[in-house]
Length: 102
Image (cartoon, rainbow, N blue to C red; front, side, top):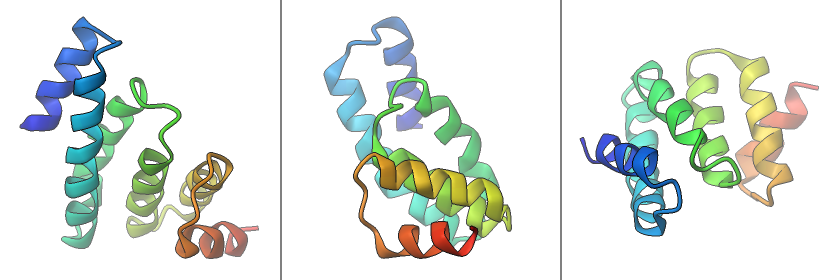
């Protein structure tokens, strides 16, 4: 899997800009697909591993929030949606779901 390869590259060289870039690209494609296929629980561990290398990437928090939301973990989802918003994200569903949980 491509994401695994980029994570391995980052474990060897945490400053590898290319690996970070392509990891984001892969996650942007895979996470919504898995969530849409009712397989959010399968993508969650990968997203959590990627967080170590991409903690300030708002998209990661949005993907995790969506995965948690799809699994009915609304409190965890709301926390991730809020983190996404704090990092400058502006997806309407994030604002709506973060507010609904409060």
